[in-house]
Amino acid sequence: MTSVPLFSLHATTEDTPTILLIEDNAANLRVTRETLLGANYRCVCARSSEEGWKALLEGHIQLVISDLSLGAGALLARMRANPRFAHIPFIIASGERRNDVVQSVMEAGANAYLTKPYPPRLLLTNIKECLAQIHP
Image (tube, rainbow, N blue to C red; front, side, top):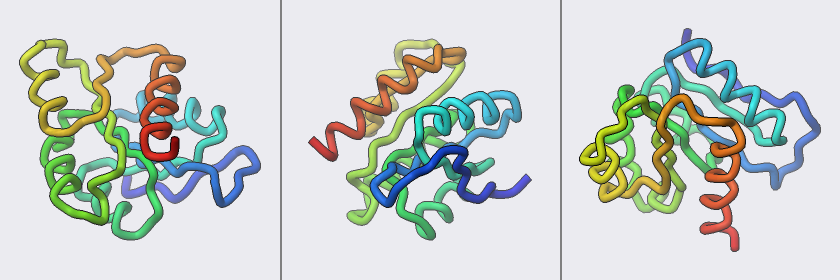
């Protein structure tokens, strides 16, 4: 599956944040996308960091959520080095629980780290906090 176009189940406005979701597990993709849409966010989906980079170049993304195993670290570094994308909040989602891994991605500039499986409410709280940092 390639990039999935913009999804919206609810009425959205120009001000509705668009979230880039990078996930290759179909079940995780479906659940997370439904969570985002249910909270009235727009969602662009990608299956790899390279597809995610293309989505960043093509669209107006306000936040990125990426599985760590899909090259999230490299994408995060690429974004932080580019003035056009450096301000965009980045949430890492992973089954990896080791403290050194979490510390490493947080030091690299991630705004949040969620260990899978995480409750949808925790994801939405992190999104809200990240977006509040760029739109106080």
